[in-house]
Image (cartoon, rainbow, N blue to C red; front, top):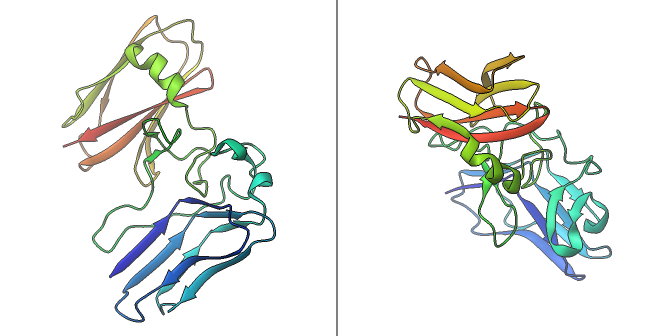
Amino acid sequence: EDFYFVNNTVINKFGGNVRFFNISPASGINTFKVYNNIFASVTGAGNTMFAGNIPSVLDTSKNSWGADFQTFGFTDPSGDDYSLTENALLAINTGTNAGSTSIGYALTPVSMYQSYTSDLITRSIIGGTIDIGAYEFGTTTGLIEHQLQPEISIYPNPFHSTIELSFLNQNWKELAISISDNMGHTFFSQKDLPFTYDYNKTIDLDRYPAGIYLVEIILDGNHFIKKIVKE
C-alpha cells in the first residue's frame, strides 16, 4: 500500500494526548510520504507525530509544527479560517516539490478551500516556492475571481493546440501573463504594456503534453488564475 499526505493544515484543539499518525499494520506499506504539512495545536497538549508501527519507508519533508495555532499566522483561527497571513513565516515559500505518486499522479495541489461551505478555488504557486499547508498566501480569492469571470475569456477549453485569451481593459495599466503546469513549472511568461481596450491574444501550446495548466493573468498587481485542459 502507498500513503501520501501532502499540503494539509491539521489543527488539534484537544488539550490531552494526541497522535497525529497511529500507523497500522506493521508491514505491507511501500510508500509513506508526509510533505509540506502544517500541524498546529493548542498549548499544553501532548502531541505525538508518529505512533504505532513506524514504517521503514517513512519519508517526511518540509512539515511545520506550531505549538499554538492561535499565533501561527492564520487569518482567523478562532473562526476556523486557516488561510495564511504575511505573519505565517514558517509556511510561506518554505515548501518543496513533493513529486508524484507511484503511478505518476502529481502531488502538487491545484485547488484549495475558501471555507467549509464554499467551492474550491484554484491554487497555484506564488513566489516561486510552494507554501506549506492547505493554502497558498497571495492566491486570488474566489470573490475577486468570480467578479471578473465574465470579462476574462480563455477558449477553447479543453483545447488541442492554441488558446485565445480576451478581455476588456477596464483602465488596467499593466498586464502580465504566465502559464504553468500543475507541478509549478512556468513555460510561458510575457508582459504587455501598454495594451488596447479590447485585448485579444493567441497562445500556441501545441508542443506541450496533454494535461492541466494554470493561466495566471496579472493586472496592476492583481492575480487572476484560470485552469485550462489540453486534450
